[in-house]
Image (cartoon, rainbow over all chains, first blue to last red; front, side, top):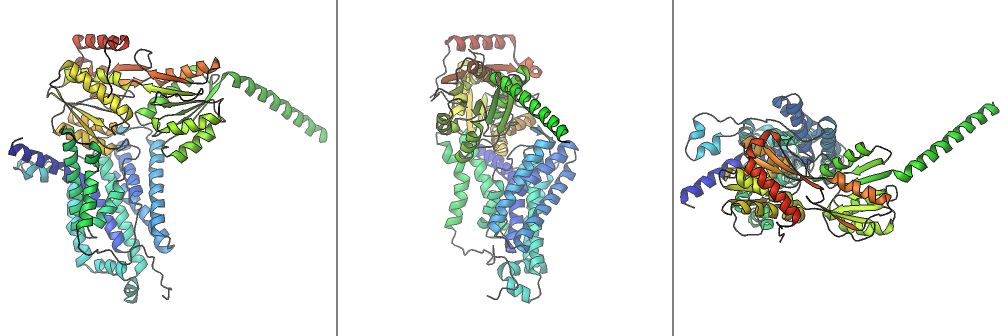
Length: 311
Length: 329
C-alpha cells in the first residue's frame, strides 16, 4: 500500500472511531460524576439497555427520535433515582445494588421489547449532519464533520463537564463530597443531596448513551444490544482517572484500536483472530497498568456516608 | 343439604374421572415438547428457526399430536441449563437443547430419563438411545451463497462477518469460500469475527468496515447478523442469509437465504417415537433429505439470471449426488 492509501485508511478508522466513541463518552462522563461524589454505579449497562429500548421504541412506533432520546434520558434519571435511594439513603453495598440495577434494567428492557415490539425491527435512525463544504475539507473534513448531532454533543460534554467539575461551586461540592464527606458536611454541604444529583445526572447520561446505540448507531434494537459497553464505560472512568479529558482519551484510544483490529482482521494477514479481537481491551489494561501517575480515585468511593457514625 | 352436597361431589368426581381418562387417552398419541435456547425465540437466526419449526408443526398437526410446547431462552451456563433440563425431562416427551454447547449436559441428563427423547445440535454424536444429534450441513447452502456472491459482486471483494471461529461458523464460512472460488478464484474473500454471537452493534461495525474497505456482498452467521444486515441495507450492498429467511429485515438487501427446516426434523422425531424409537441417531440437515432449503427473495430476482439459476440448480443436484463435496478443515 502506498503512503496515501495508509493515510486514507487512517482517516476512515478515525472517522468511525469519533462516531463510535460517543456512547462511551456519555456513559463514562456520567459515571465519573457519580463516582466523583462517592457512588460507584455498576448499573450503567442496565440503564443503557433501558435507554436504548425507550429511544428505539419511540423512534419506531411514533417515528419521533427526539422524543425517544428525551424519554431515554428521563428513564435513565429514574433508574438513577432508584440507585441513589438504595445506595445513598438505604446505604446498601454499592457493588451489589449496581449489579442489581444492571440486571433489572437488562430484564425490563428485554421484556418490554418482547411485549411492545416482538421481534427485530429497524428504523432509519438519526441522520448525519454532513455540513456542506466542511465535509469536503482535506483530511479532517470527514473525521470532524460527517457525524450526527449527538456526536458533537458528546465531544462538547467533555470540556463542559471539566468546567462544571473544576470551575463551579457545585463541582467543588461534588469533589468534596466524594473525598471527605464529613468535612463537606461540616461545611454545610448536603452530602445526600449532592450524591443524589450526581447519581441521577450520571444515569441520565447512561440513558442517553443507550439511546445513541439504538437510534444513532445500530438503528435497531435487539436482545443484549449494549453487550458490555456499560462496563467498558466504567473501566474508562478508571482509565481516565476521573477526569473528562482522560475519559475522552480512553474512549478514543479504545475506538481507534477497535477500528484497527477490524481492518486488521479483514486485511487477510494470517494472525489468530482471537488475539486481534481482544487487542483493544488488552491495550486499555496495559496502558492503565503502565502509567505510573498516582490514582486519583475519590477517597470516599463506595463508602456510604453516615452522619451519626462516631468513628 | 347433605344430599345436595353429595350430589355435587358425585358429579365432581364423575367429571374428574371422565376428564382424567380423557387426558390419559390423548397422552398416548400426543407428545409434549420442551426447548432450551441459547438466545431468544425472535433472534431472526438459529433459535427462531427451531422455534418457528416447532410452532408451525404444532399448528399443522394440532393439539391432538403436539399437546404442549414450552421453552426457556437465554440459557448458556451449565448450571442453569442442567436444572432447566432436569425440570423438563420428567414432564415432557421431547426435550430439545438447541446448541452444541449443551452436549455434556444432554449426556448427563439423558441417562436418567430413558423414556424422554433428547435432541441437541449442531453435533453428530447421538451418545444414547434416547438422544438425537442434529447436524445442519450449513456448508451446503453456504456454497450456493458463495456462487451467488461471486456472480453479484462488482468490486471483486466479498465479506464474511463471523461470530467466533467454531462449529457452524467454520462450516458456513468454509462452504462460502469454496463456493466463491468455484466461480472465480481471484475474488477476494475477507473474513472478520466479532468474538461474540449476540453483539449486534459489533456485527454492524464489522459490516461497515467491510463495506468501507470495498466489499459489496456480505454474509455471516449467528443472531448478531441482524446488525450487519442493517448496515448492508443502509449502504446499498447485498446480503446472503443463513439459518432462517431474513429477507423481511431488508427486502432490497437479502438476495437469498439458507433455511434450517427444523419442522421436518421434529416431525421425524415424533413419528419415530410413535414407532417406539426414542433417539440414538445422527440427523443431518441437508439438501438431500430436504431438512435444508434454499430460498430466493423475489424482490431481487433480477440478480439471478437464467444462467446463474441453472448453475444453482445443477450445484444442488451435485451436492446431493456427492459430485461436489465441501471439505471442512
